[in-house]
Image (cartoon, rainbow, N blue to C red):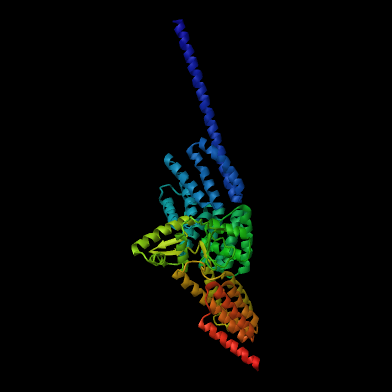
Length: 581
């Protein structure tokens, strides 16, 4: 019995020791988990503080250390850093990443029944969608935020009103935007959240710009700038300076707008900022147009455009440094660039997709009927088969471009997206339209600077006839002759201006430069011959004819038209009569 008692005592002792060690281990694990949770929370606070300062590098470094710890703490603690992560991605302009972070955290919280952070995660998702221009998805995220069942605190309410105001601005609903912006500002002031008050003042200022309330704009911007300065936040200062720049631009103060853009863009470049919240992408695009037009912080302006896919109301076809995703050149030969690199087309590559692109440009590029495109490319086949071929070719072209947004097919009509593509035909048409508008009401072409600058820009674009080396596709021929005719009318006005200014050499030079680009445009030679005749240079006029005759004989094995030969004979006869006298 004694032995049995001793054995039992030993087992109890062993069991007690194991229990004690387990308790100690559990306590140690709990203590470790608590320490990690505290560390995680402190790091999250440090990240948010770094974001408030505008120090994205410090915020990213701190978050990098959190990502490993998050797997070793309760889900309720691990979800908190997702807010900081999402905000960091938003400030840095990585909207898709911010949305992904928010959606992953929402899914993880939902699987654990944790919804504490849902309002902020949903707000981050809504902001990402608004910054990307996806109003429909942003509206759905906002509806989910308001009707998700989670009790919204006053600070959350300020965020809801702010997002509603932003969405209303994008929708063009000024009255609703102003009401929501004022409510966001009131709640932010009431709850004592100065950085949110600053953002609310900025969005309210933008709304008041739309309502032409200049005093209101100035008051809100003064308040926003004061808060940004008090908080020493480069990010808020950046947002406020951009808003001030837009206010100056809207008021017609180009100098003031450029000064604000320079200060804001320098700060954005230094800290790695992108589109601030509450902004209309088109307004930011207009500031970028101004910056690139005046060479103000061009690298940062281009980065803003590329990252946000910004597009102003009027395509900036004449802003040379605008970072177009695609460029298409057709004058003097065909070239398609993705960024700055030619789109490679191997000899074995599909030729029909690029021909579809060329025909689309030839037919105007906008709202071109699919049937017209199919008929141009497959004129000798049945309509149904031609349309099926068009659909397949369009699919192949989109795959080649690697961007489905470039070509928009809607209601059976195909359009090149003017926000993503620069086409030389568009740029030339815009230049000629602007010239016509400037001359409206003026006496011929009296402005010498306008004549000179306009001619330089037009002839820089017109490198030669439209698709000169392509097949004799009827749409190409029609487009080619249309541009030739319009350019000759333009040059006639320019030449007349030079002649009236007693500068016949400059008048002749316009036609000579045009002929250098398009040596087979016979009407241009006739205009040049007449120009030389009016300036009293008959030998030069006859020389122009000989140049045309040589070009036609060499290139086309043909002779000048009867009209040109008649003009030549007339000039030659006049020259002989003058010589006999």
